[in-house]
Length: 361
Image (tube, rainbow, N blue to C red; front, top):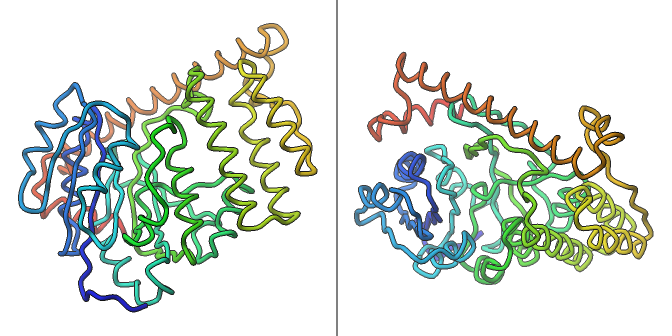
């Protein structure tokens, strides 16, 4: 790959909303990047807590903090990009962390990429509070792939890549277009489909690492009972199918689309049967057939005497209670670890950097 710059500028773009508990650590991880030529832009999306005040403590020549009225994460990301100057874009949510050499590892690999239209990926591990215990579990997306094969595997196997894993050239970012501000759920999935449509290949850099904070919850509960979120999810699903079939309309890709519909059909039961019926028709149009979704075996026994809707709500409530308990336990263990040996919160930037570096090996 050729580039007009020996040391491309990387813009680290951080949308933030009521992130006072996390934003300091996220900014420390951005500042700790060993890649020297970087700018950091935080766009606060109308937070009602201390997010802006904390972020402004980090303001410098390298860190810019701006505010906007509450419009959603997609609008904040679009605003951040409009303010950026970087040759490459690093998206970073306000509660996630980057290993110190994440960007450097990816930039160093750019000569192995086909062109500025190559989408550069990385590994990610999940954690709650103890980032140094993040679990890095490879999937079939952790490979060098063509864009159609990447999207096909995602939909066929119900996989994803976390937003911060990507390093995207400005050329590719501009070609993909802005984040869709109408997508109140799965906006990242829909956005990166469009990035894939415009890229020539996906390059996976396993040594580059992201720490993805997941504070519990469940796969059903994240759309809540919001009609707007369910409708946005359905719009995203239809776009996913259209994007994949525009790249490859084969028996395998159509079968992958049917699997994708089947896996997500449960989001629309029993409240949005109109969407479920539309999904069933779409599957038939592609030569497939959907079956009625099933609750996990741990909760399906409730359906016979509670009914579908109430059984689902109970299962979501129980899953949330379990996640909340896990969150409290992980927080307690994190505080114990801090008393024994202080970690990210309260560390100096250099110590934070060294601990993140050790955790990435």
